[in-house]
Image 1 (cartoon, one colour):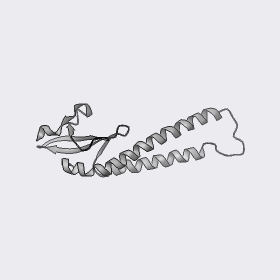
Image 2 (cartoon, rainbow, N blue to C red):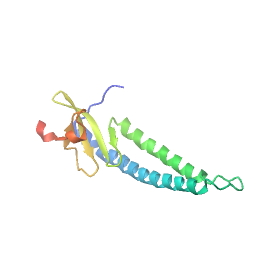
Image 3 (cartoon, one colour):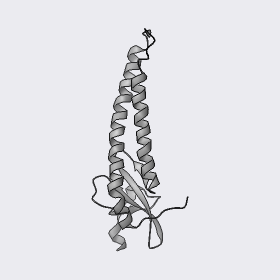
Length: 136
């Protein structure tokens, strides 16, 4: 697959759908963290007890976790299919590959920002964010 490059306008136009996927991923991550902790606690509690009656005390919770993982994978795939690079679910950080004046950069956006206003090189990452206005 060839590299997709976005203009600032194209990237901004994708923000509503990217925002939906990121917010869903954040919710799923919170739910997964909670359910995984409950599962670990349940396993520690029951590790020395005999399973009576043949029921798997972990089955339902493991199924819920598996479903959440599938749901997360769907949202990650949605983001990647758009050509967007998912960087950090927790803070809602994504990059849009772009070329500005022939230079390859990443347009950088995170949840809470109204529009794309920053870019950085692939090497400098988030800490090297610079205002797009520098190119105007």
